[in-house]
Amino acid sequence: MRRGSGPRRMGRLALFLAGGAVLLLGLAQLFLPRIAADRISSRLGRYGTVESVHVKSWPAVKLLWGSADSVTVRARSLSLSPARTAKLLWEARGFGRIAMTATSVREGPLRLSDVSFAKQGQALAAKARLAGADVTSALPEGVDVQLLSSEGGEVEVKATGGLFGVRAAVDAVAAASNGKLIVHPVAGFLSGIQLTLFSDPHVHVQAVGASVEPSGPLSYSLTMKASLR
Image (cartoon, rainbow, N blue to C red; front, side):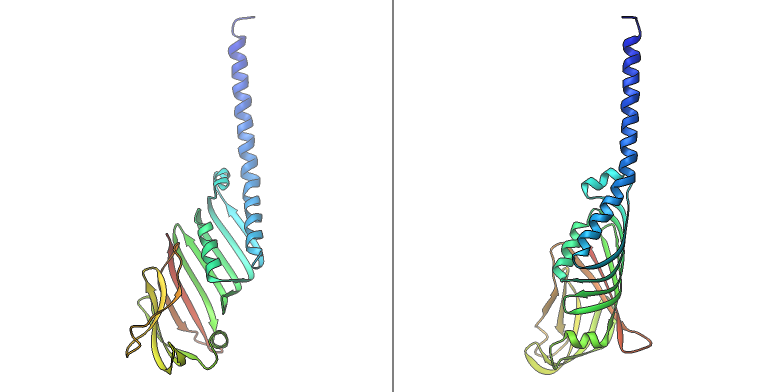
């Protein structure tokens, strides 16, 4: 064997392995985001119509561990329960940024429109429009709700009809409390009663807001801020 042939072979082998690694990384960068987008689209598609999903991740191989730099989703209509929404958010905890828009989302009994949702790190923010007619259809028969004010992350309403087991007109506040979304009467002998509207160990509600849309049929703009825990 001629001197130097061994090191040259080792050098060629190293170059071959390095080239193969670069090729594999390039293929992963090309295909893994597409595969991840298809999986997300299929997962959300169980709950409605998804128009498009785009995934960005560098390096793409971290998608194999459930991480991504950003995910953008456009949906036409979705129908979920609050518990299912919380579960999907927890499954997406490894995504650095999420931007989702949907024409219509049915969240439990409420039908929301013009929905936008954003995740930045562990911070969550959502905005949607709620038509007055959809508020009426989601409430028990004979119950009506009127928005009074919204500030400091709380929403105050006047509810008339059967509420908290009493037939009356009651001013109540919806607010975050220890990560839960609760509603309770403002004053009177019912003030010690509270109902939990949303509670999940992984989604910590921080603030809610509401305002009346300035034009058109009665509708409301709703906002919520939360974080993943």
